[in-house]
Length: 207
Image 1 (cartoon, one colour):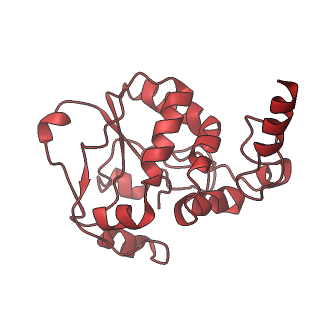
Image 2 (spheres, rainbow, N blue to C red):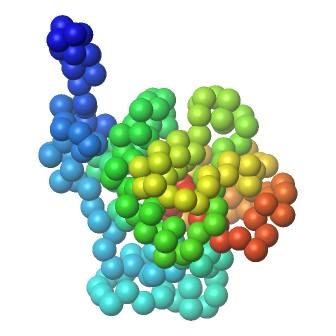
């Protein structure tokens, strides 16, 4: 038995999701990579747009009523080694990264579910062509593992929202181009699934 345990500990060494250095679970990032994680800081409480200084108040866009969501939670700025780990998850098909990252953002998911009295957690879907090429939906994987780690009672629904248009990749587009790229890209196939319910949409990156 001891030999088996030694072999397993050798084969399954916890690694940093960004640089592959050894880590102590449940930390997904090594100490060096963790220093690159940049908290969002002061931001519009409705759309998450970063602001220069506190207190966080609604931005001009939200005050004008041009933001369709009730609120958005984005704990960190995109970039650094956390951004690198998300790119590895998506483009290198490293499924295990979604599970490793769950302890990092599960508290934020739990807080959003509790604060918003959420009835349904819905990951942003991929178009079927991209899903077939990638093999999995990274937003669904992140939402599923975070929900489990957080112990959220709100169910995960992967059929409430459907991507009906195969949009261009958002990576190299600016904010306005990204918004235009997503126009009429989604549909709610069965409105009764979400009617009267408070829905939390989960994505890996928000721009």
